[in-house]
Image 1 (tube, rainbow, N blue to C red):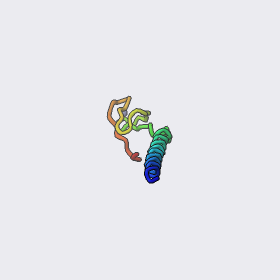
Image 2 (cartoon, rainbow, N blue to C red; image 1 turned 60 degrees about the horizontal axis):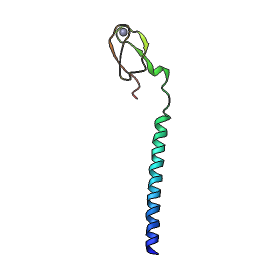
Image 3 (cartoon, rainbow, N blue to C red; image 1 turned 180 degrees about the vertical axis):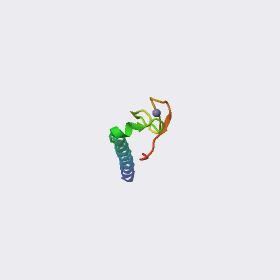
Image 4 (cartoon, protein in one colour; image 1 turned 120 degrees about the horizontal axis):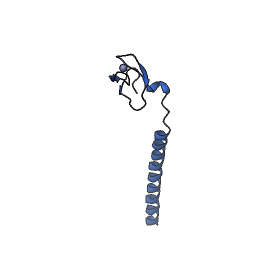
Amino acid sequence: MIKLELATLIFLYILFSVIGILVIWIFFGYKGIKRPPAKETDYVWKCSVCLNDYIDSKNEDISVCPLCGSYNKKEGISR
Ligand SMILES: [Zn+2]
């Protein structure tokens, strides 16, 4: 009788552990996929040398101006 209860307890412990891990996994996986799409303005860069406005969606911190080739650092809202 005690052995059966112990087995049930272990079973429940493992079951809830797996469910907990699954819930956390799904939650974080869902959050990773369901990231809010970046706004169009996030990709707009303004060159500090030639004041050219251009779009670069590949880089987030430093971008190269297509006109003069100078490096621009993202300023303003830090994400
Ligand atoms: Zn430029």
